Image (tube, rainbow, N blue to C red; front, side):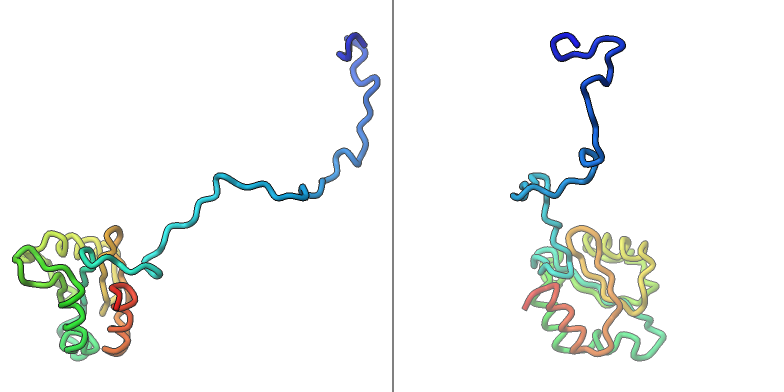
Length: 160
């Protein structure tokens, strides 16, 4: 072996590998910081949606009495949505709607609500449903059984 480099015909001479060399080793005493670790993004389930983005559509089957669970007529829900949804392009109407599942939104003046409706319809949503604009993908949730449960769910995403 010349200068620590094996010469032809000397490969392996002077080297010994044991089973211990191949065995798994315990982790170092001090953990190494992982600089690539990234916190997961907040999900709509845990984040209050900013007021300028909190648009809501309640969709139901108008030919089935009670399919909207009273969410369409409940004064507390209406008051909440009136104060938490942004005002639409007409300068006076809050960006919240109560629509039959067959609505086309062709006459809707709000481009944001038209887009929300189209995106939700592509998701093949349940009926009745609560459709909430998150600023990205629409959140489509089954409509809760009672108006008070519906209001609680709205407050979860729209804040108090």
